[in-house]
Image (cartoon, rainbow, N blue to C red; front, side):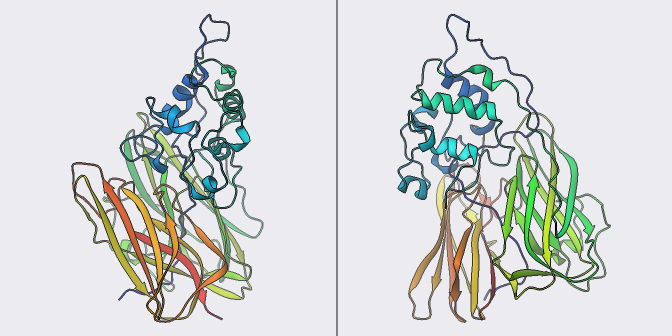
Length: 436
């Protein structure tokens, strides 16, 4: 029997249109001038200068199972965008289209890129990258306003020249403190996952009311671990440890504190609720990057912890991981699991975590009378839904949280549980407090 564990992790927001572009200033791009006799079509430029570089790459909007059901590969990008309803249920219900010709303000693509999002619309795009500069956004707006044609030069190509976006420090919190994982290299076309221990600057107990995370592009995840209260041994402070190379007995002794998958992420507990942080805590900062490009990239993470000394309720984590995963080649497989609550609890948030073979994740509550309620659903492995409950979701002692994750293995290899982006996971997380 699994049960609720007292630790803390949160894994980011939802998306149905995403990308994996770079956060460094782009090298100047050669764009055909408007004075040519046959100017390049605006959509062709959009395809070559944005989609091909940031979106239509492996693991994002390309291949047999593109993120959000949206392939942006050259042969299909225009017909998949223009006049098509998004897979995001909230956006589709509002009558939005991925690209609505002549109506930029009703085009979900531009809304996602600008970050002008409503409830349940998900996170700003591109995924894991700095936001697009104003020139690129204006180019897209002009193209949509002109009817979003697949041919013809209707937007100013000079708007696509270069970018001034750079990665900058997250401003420290007014009440709390900041942690920083300094820059490190990620080899071309490779994963890299590292761990670095740091001391908390707080000598006395504090309570975390929320956090902010800011990362360079291409992060698969960031997790902030702690060591149990009273622990006297842990890895050398400041040493960079590599997954699979420098792991030791300390690896199994840590507990989750918080986590994120998005380049810019924030979470706040409900008013009066906070997560306990003992004084003199030793943190272990874990960063996993996936570099899909042919050149060396850099990873870097800032974390702000917002704190108080007087919470009304103590937050805890709901966390369980199913490791018995076996995905045969070219098959759809459903992995199921459940956990039983040993207490009456108020759930504030639920989310999930899989890797790129994950297609759908659903969570149910099985009530004491045997009936089940669907309380969570997500179809985006990149940015799974983070469902918060304005009125806490009450689960009574003895009731079950049951979940099922659907995977489509589109490779010729068996996929099992593991830590790399080529493996799979099946995790349910969330925050709760004892019922009052």
